[in-house]
Image 1 (cartoon, rainbow, N blue to C red):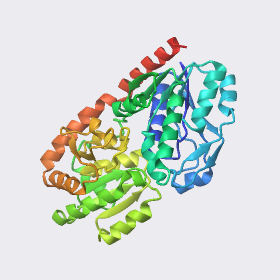
Image 2: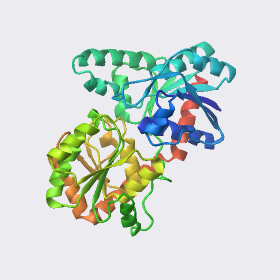
Image 3: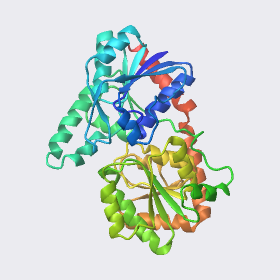
Image 4: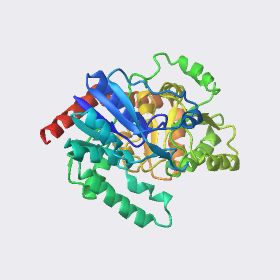
Length: 396
């Protein structure tokens, strides 16, 4: 099968959408499908800023990457690019016609996908990776207007798809509630359970801690954008309370973003300089090492459509403390961690102390989490996508 995948963000950006798109394309290629990725063109500065080599990511012999013309967006928009919809995708697909199109987003690249679908009469499948109305926080003076417009546009867009998906039932139900009528299915993103895996020898944990300069420290990790919606201040206030009982605890923060300055101010105000470490933007292999070196994972964001980093942490055998918001409770529960009320940093701290003080409990929850995420392996998820693609082709 020849599949064209469109996305508005991709490598060298690092995040859940980017990871999911790359993993899907690579896994499809490994199954013998031919995949062409149509994603934004980034500048050399984008690569350098993230500390990454200026070269294309290798996803295997059956995957080719085409870069669409794009413009830079303000830094607060997660360092993304805005694809300029000039029918570039249509012209490329006209000469290299796929069997179907799979769009990951609804903006510039998404419009390229939709137009190519209509002009070439190709079936299009749409995946929604975010509950986009939650980003109204960035428009405080026009929040209701933003939500109304973006929900209308998103609904209009996905109603042009033969089939739709979301990485959680929560996200899918939100789309359907807003009026999306296309055939829908909740399909998890692929969790790379080969790269993200528990240590075979727990004695290696201290060695890994040392690689991050954190030997002999209990480590709680978080990875993601340093953005308003990730609620870093809740994590920091929780760590401040944890430190009262476990003085050497360290919160390891992986990622980057415009909120770093605000988080650093909170760190200074709470006198947490010895208890928080920014470890930078990490590759998938490095992120796996951080999780393997950690003792627990914490996430305070209440807008997740899935929470890929939480699943990656689980795959490494970490217990997770998350909040009772959006899709997190679909994946984090009493078997693999703790769910606490939104913004309740005191309860979050209480659960983290419980995990750090009881290694047997942490190990039991962590191993259960690992067993739980194995169902999201590439073999299982690709099987689901093949079923969706077959349905789309039959509805052509």
